Image (cartoon, rainbow, N blue to C red; front, side, top):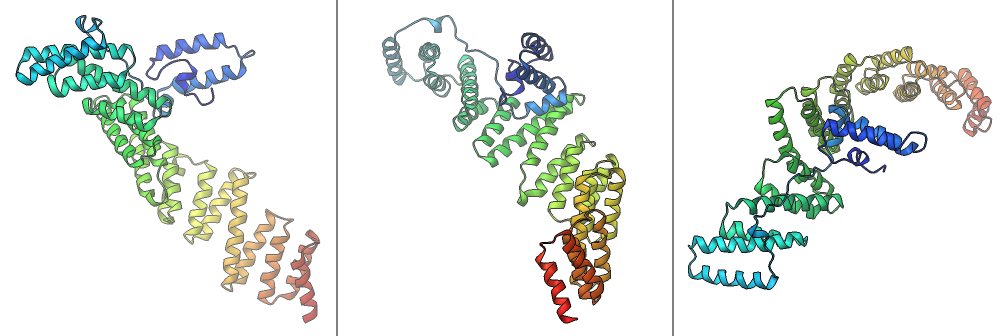
Length: 425
């Protein structure tokens, strides 16, 4: 059950109405009570939670295949039983007559009825590829406007694609759905299926093209009904999905997708966070800082975003500002582990950088600040000792190496430093 989508858990198909969802939920929670069927009950609760609100339902719906309602259409005459041999002989005869008189509307009508009779028989026998061949023959060779052949061909391709996709046979599903798309190019549910199936089949470029088409169709729908919360959130979720597909070489495309989300929902935290993180990973420190600051204006208590602002400032060379940011984090949440880790890593990095440039006093400020967070770290006292030694303050260096030895009696490096200092004394 853990691999089922929310509709399957509630024993529904995608596209179920709000009432059908509520009714299914009510029936299932009575059937599978919490005490006797705990896991099933929790799965039902979770599934209902995903579908009971337009925004949550949109997130569930984006990557779930759409099934299609409809039926095969045959006239009473087209359903008259006949043996394969009778149909083959009759078709051979009418084709011969058509070759002699190709413009005869009457002969064409007879051929259409024979092919429809055979396709009906093949449909009943679930010989769908053969039935498809009959409908295609009607539309390509005899009567391009014959509505029942159009209906049956489209419905069969839609259903065949769905059954194949549900069994993970995505390449073949795409082939059937692409045939359907030739007949119904603006069917948004069909184009969405193609986008999902191409993605599963590993055809990222084609998938992106179909997603783009879906967005165009849904945006048109939203423009005609701006209050459609479900459609609005579907667009947001596609943008989010496409943004999440961006790799290191295509960060600008991902950022653009998330910016499109913000046009629809300016308060979308995830979109703002993804933009800021993408800019950070691109090492565009100024833009990253601006993005984190924009995010924090709307979510001022988000420690994770504030920590990332600190790192952006540090990488931009704004050392004092970075530690001021982290100090604000500490003031908000003194026990936050990620903040403490950030400060420790940053102090160590900055301290070493200053020392490498011969700026020993500044280096010592950062190394000593680490004692507040790691008072029992032999590594910190070793850094302090090394810095004092380079500065020429051997007494302070010896004190620091001695402290490192007390904290870690097996520290060979500290022992060696103290030994060397005694020899040179």
